[in-house]
Length: 144
Image (cartoon, rainbow, N blue to C red; front, top):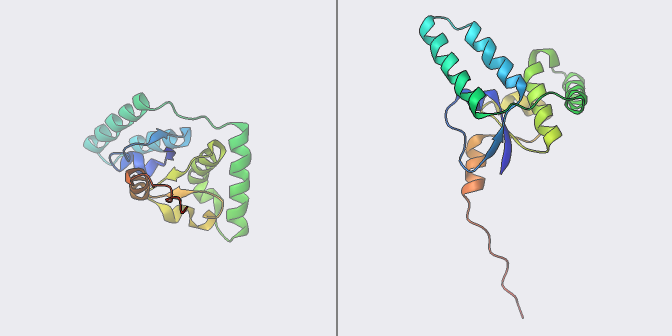
């Protein structure tokens, strides 16, 4: 299974196994911000180490013109449905990246995407783990 990992998955521990995973540059921006606003030196060190591992593990997907168009579509949908797209700008950029690449978005924060659940495939990592762990299904027996 191919999927885009949300920032919440990157900071939440191990990604699900058997996933060909990618990340968005928007997640890198969120992680860099997290390092800079860490409350103390120990937390900053932990976040810096985590960021280094993530940057060496993944080549982040850039925000292209296609992704920008998709972000605009998702942001307009959020606004038209009574939400505040500017408060969710990074989440929308990450969702737009997943949509443009035709892959599900794995997130621990499914509620962040509820307002556009019909426009993006946001799943919990545990749901993705279950779908990759399921045994293959057998075709129905020939009834002849």
